[in-house]
Length: 418
Image (cartoon, rainbow, N blue to C red; front, side, top):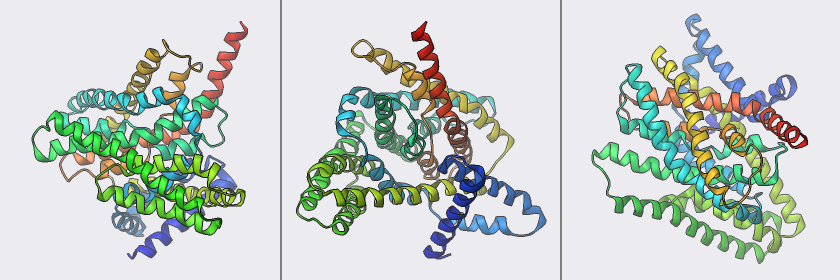
């Protein structure tokens, strides 16, 4: 199938599912799309024995799409830039210590704690995954997905400081998790440990290099924006920043996600204030909001359809069910420790740990990293468990987060009155 035909099918399905969700189901956009795509996929599987052949055609379509390449080296740059464009740098600076802790120490701690606990689950079920593969699973499932988180946050009435913590963490922690994932994958594939010096160098090159590179390309785009007053040209400059910047970061082996987030923050703050007219700001926001909506729709449809190419067994499904509460518990611990320590120096919103735990959605990035694993007897079980955690995260946590936040705020207000 040609690239145009693949895009045509995905965009058409996204449009149809969006219409169905808006007219009849009325769920939040991305959640509704994924649920409809998931139900359609299960329907195709159920129809398989009837001999219609739709299931096989759908599988051929999905196998022709490299999910890892499509998301991590394609859609992600646009979605991250669109998200970073609307985050206030001053608000982010006020939350810098908690965001830094959640995006680094919490991800590292969660990687190994999830790995150890899931290893016991796999042993108990007779699946026997090596410890290093369990740590790989911990690395890919630990970061919250900025795409899922930001799409759910839209329209939620939460305190500004809490919204900044959630969105700031989600925008940065995926870059750190990818670095950890690559280090562990190198150990697994090469069969030997990497020296501490090599780990420090890799982290510095990917993460710190991403920050410096993001500032450089962001400043270059800012310089160009300041010297023109034509919104078509200025939108094109930001489009070149995202596509060219991410591609060059990949070529230089530095973190593309971190680079684009930093550049997006710079353009969305200093660029918006000092380099754009009101007309440009309006048109730029409209363009990137539309890009965000379209790509989010396609991505969540893809996540829902991905069930067609997974291998399910009773043991795999049992492992997924058992691992879900483990991931939630570890999220609570990895968020609770830094918040508890930082309480000695600053105050937090009531129930912040509970809200950060329940709003820690997993999404397409986790699936993409799982699909990037090399072929092995252990890849299928990691894929199914990852998919189970992601589906639970988006459908259950995503659909209830507003109610959870309202309930906790009501509880906090009633406690204050007492």
